[in-house]
Image (cartoon, rainbow, N blue to C red; front, top):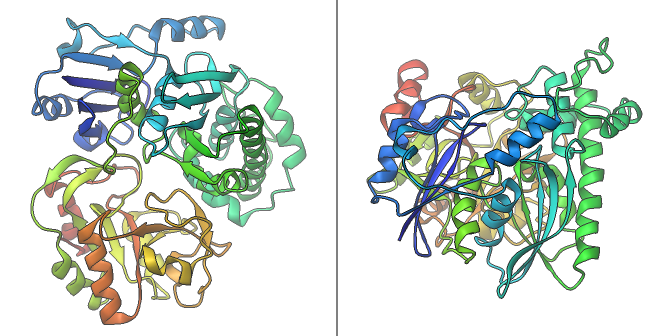
Length: 469
């Protein structure tokens, strides 16, 4: 049976197609419309999904009636769900927001039993929840926190206060935190946790312009509250050594390391935010584990992975874009829509930032062969295939381009089973240079989504003379 899951009309819409226990397709709307974090469902995405067959079952990632009740409670206007014409005459199954987050995490995890922690800004009323996932009974909610108390809203409000886009640029705030003093505004900022931050906090210390210290204080508070929630989850379900973390806040890869102090095994689905809840909507309906083969689920650019073409550019000291295979589902470029560079150059970081039009303080991630990760980083886990942890580099002098201000990197590990083409590129580059890693960043320009088709990548060749293979 072909099932669709949809998350849309809030931010970063997505559609997933499932048949039985196989994910046939999953993609964000932005990849088809070209609009960053597009909340709508473009015709092109609907048509791409229909290539896998007509759906017999359609599932929605949240309950709009409950959401309107919360809007009433918050003094906001009610909103009708503006469905795409294809969906208007079809039966749709509605699930609650945190249920679909939890389902996306638990039913893609490798664990038959798990504690699931969901943290985001807000769904209908729930802002944080803890679940018990067991094979016999599925997911059972053990505890939840309700609006207006919200750790996610707090982080988004500080993001907005720092003149960044909430629900989009929280990752920039996380990067800024390494440059600031976390104690400078800690005390007054902590008091914000007890207030309703749905409309932001732009009147908070309005004279302050030092956003690095704001970011550092917010990150410190988030980490403290996040660890409290992890401990709470452990105390509620002490028998469980498996933790699943979901919701948009699961993208805070600096804080994620703290969970490793309390759990032996952790799973974070590569699209833990609302886009991943399109898959979660299906799984909330089936309540069965899916066959998770990896995040390469979007538009397919056919052809063998361009190892030799990419290697040729890299050995000449050039950056190279790779647009090949199925696009990644989620916000991270994991090799199929990536911009690669040699991480050893002193000036390469500035060159890549200039091309991508990013702030100079923004860090880049390394992608490294799994077997060499432990020689270059203090790995707290055996592997990190989805860039979900920030890890100290042990060879800072050798690889300056992938280091943040605090000496850390958001590491992606690769083995030959996970991604044979990317692994071959890394291995061949290592044989030629002795360097087991590459700088890896998304193949996009600031404010625009990652490229989807081969044609989307031509802007890099036309404007910046960066070859895309």
